[in-house]
Image (cartoon, rainbow, N blue to C red):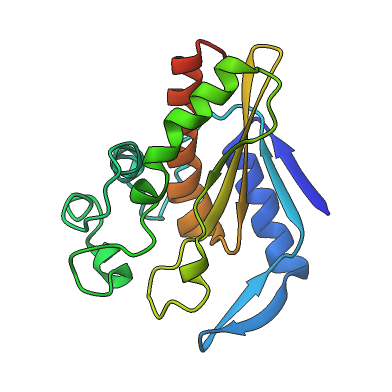
Length: 196
């Protein structure tokens, strides 16, 4: 496994982009040619450094904030994200809902995470399950990319590990997922009264 570790998302992005361009494997997925790195871990040592903006590349930090609120609110509608990203319609099967929206999948699990970690700070079963059996054969534009989110409370800090089936370096990981999930992590840390 290759581990990319830094407190800076800018540095991580640069190193991962170099690795992808240097030795990433070319594959064709859904008819599109792409490059991938297998067995990669990205360790962001300072998750509150969540905004990564590359000059010349469109990025909207308000989209990440709205996605985080979408998750915490248990939402799955396109309309609430549309003001921040008109391309979100490309991921909806019907123009109304997002099949793989994380909010409706995990909102009801969040109290269980908090309860488990309050009852036993060393618990290792504080897991948010995003992927569902029905996703295996779903004919959708929006299968969930992030599938499991694990939390551990150690030395008064909340650690978060995300397992994905797929994650786009440019638009997924650094534009949306890092800021969105780090806001979720910070929210849970605040509720638990611990540090990131």
